[in-house]
Image 1 (tube, rainbow, N blue to C red):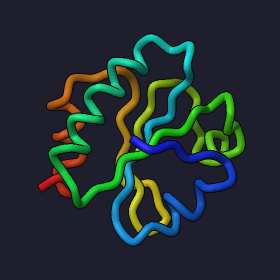
Image 2 (image 1 turned 90 degrees about the horizontal axis):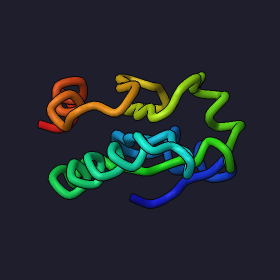
Image 3 (image 1 turned 180 degrees about the horizontal axis):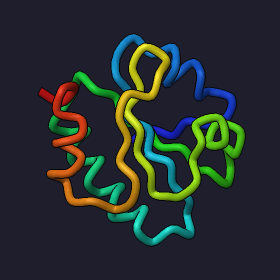
Length: 104
């Protein structure tokens, strides 16, 4: 997954032409590494959805703008709006269920 930051968040996520999943994470977060593996699998399986990651320590403005209170959190954005989110490290089937309308 490619990285976004405070400077690129609006352009890469909010202004994107299609759906974008943002993985809000931090290097010190152990559960975030498990989520990263799941999201990379989903990225390979679903080419019509973009997947990016945002380090909340390096980009606190974007994280605050999205109301991120705990990590890992993954939010699917479409049309500049958050549409569906998964909080915490969850199994792949949970992400697929929450985002089923976009991953089909």
